[in-house]
Amino acid sequence: MTRTDKTKAAAGTFTDIPDAGWIARRAPGRLRPYLRLARLDRPIGTWLLLWPCWWSLAMAVPRGNRDWGDWADWGNWPDPWLLAAFALGALVMRGAGCAWNDITDRDFDGQVERTRSRPIPSGELSLGQAAAFMVLLALIGLNILARLNPFAMLIGVMSLAPVVVYPFMKRITWWPQVFLGLAFNWGALLGWAAVRGDLSLAPVLLYLGGIAWTLGYDTIYAHQDKVDDALIGIKSSARALGAKTRPMLWLFYGTAITLFGLAGWRAELGPLFLIGLVLAAVQLAWQAGRVNIDDPGDCLAKFRSNTWFGWIVFAAAIIG
Image (cartoon, helix red, strand yellow):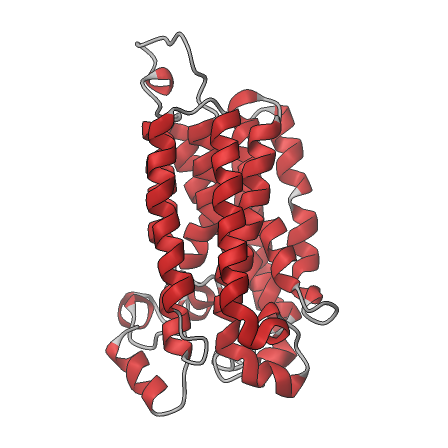
């Protein structure tokens, strides 16, 4: 959190929208609402969408004989073009997803302290402007997807289903985090498909592990809004679990680590992957053991720390 955000939190007006970040200081005035709509000042969401992609790309690198003249076959490094393409894809599709989420949640966001200053409920952007921006970002993502092999393209198009339904789940089920996991971890399937042109048990296990991971970190995230959510009738795993959150975090994160380990085994990664995974497990244990679910600022900090978890798992897949 910035100093300004901490001051707001101390004053009882917690928000995760920085008002003194690079968008406010450097971006042209007309672009600022669009950049905030895409959450470009909060990259954690892009990282969370990207990590399953990069993990899968690293795991899918063919083992055995390699053509040492080809960078894509050098060591355990995935193709750098794919790394860059998935990074750009995660950036624009996260932005498109945020726009879709804000469009569908516009009436709720205005009633929640943390979200009422977002561009749509605050009146900075009209519904039409937000929708046009969402379509533009989606078209950029589609252009990137079109450069992959046909099977990967099919897998990528299928990812739209969980993205479209996710915002409505908080009205229906106490576990919308499951549907967020289905959407945010699709890259575990897409990354493998982009390299191998097929799917196997390894990426499926990685995908399921990612869903369990998302259940953990997004339950922590949802505790920021539990008071407002209760007032307006929004459901979440944070509200469903309440005081039982901590033991369930251990279950979610333990399941994630186990499934990641099995994915690495099925992908024929070496023992160094498991050593790296132990370090990743320590990071998750720190989250589960230290999070204060009644402190929105601490929940946000623990949530953001998953960037470090992603780097550890990615490094483990590389050295594995």
